[in-house]
Length: 154
Image 1 (cartoon, rainbow, N blue to C red):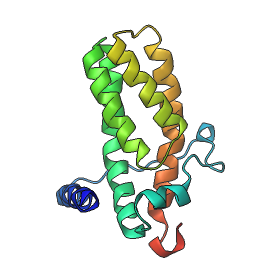
Image 2 (cartoon, one colour; image 1 turned 30 degrees about the horizontal axis):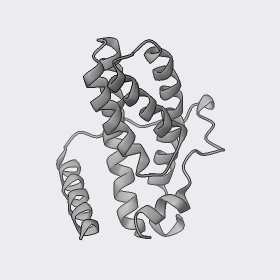
Image 3 (cartoon, rainbow, N blue to C red; image 1 turned 180 degrees about the horizontal axis):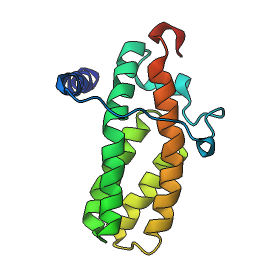
């Protein structure tokens, strides 16, 4: 039953995104993002979606829409030294990233979440810088995957 609930929740989010009239800005892969290496294990990620490539492709599109906003929420929380907002924003961002498996970005999101939970932002800006670098590679992978035909993907 949980799978069906998650499916309908995902379908609801997909519908909301499709209703938006504005288009998202294109994502470019920087040299520093190391796009040839890739950060997402797509075959493993597909297992999370029980082999449903169409669903995974839709979740990729959602992540491309939502992840930049979630990362901005983390930035804003660190800038304002708001530990509770950081905890919540990093938790939400990390959950979105973990839909695609464990990556450096998901590890750093957890670290930021723990910093917020512990009320210690001493290294917050340094971790955020590392997070932004990791997110560049993550978003690059998502963008490349979104452009491929569904049947040609893991």
